Length: 259
Image (tube, rainbow, N blue to C red; front, side, top):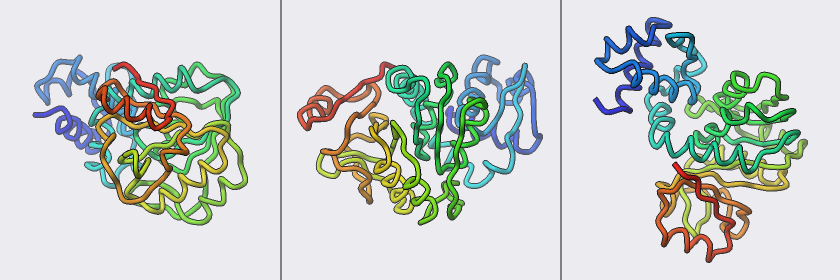
């Protein structure tokens, strides 16, 4: 069983029983406790479970819709996303910062590495991101937009969500997408989410694009941010030398996170 399929099976199992121990899940899935613990850490980072001493608890209704799609997004290239998240937290976030986080899984990978930052104020339109913020950063000031709930992505979208960001100002917005090319810039496939991302960008002093290397060179339907307007881009070390040079030649402040 491939790792992604195993993680979906673990999540399905926890959804049925509510909680289980790592030892019992190791027996059920014929894997070592180290492997199960690693899978659970990835699922916890994505917001699907909460690890307890020796086991894990299913997080419940907020994550039940479209399980397979979101598990795949969160677990594919998980190591790369964690590397990007760690790099961003260490190099782009300061104490007392005000941040906007979009709904992407790569952006959400930043959150576990913010626990040593003090006095953060963070706003998002993503239910999953807000949940992760409450679990990892309960002492921070956390703001959630209103708006129309998109059941597919579990994001709040539409005019109300867009207006929310017109009333606030952030020092940094962390934005992701499903593709990036030099001619088209950062792009996404969800037009309503794209409109909210653009509202975040307009109200942020600095915009940092976070995207794993597999998406560089892949186009998508709706432009989020033109290449000329990208102030910094963080990706993982899977990016090729030719791609790195192309990004640097375009004037992008490129940062490569070691995996």
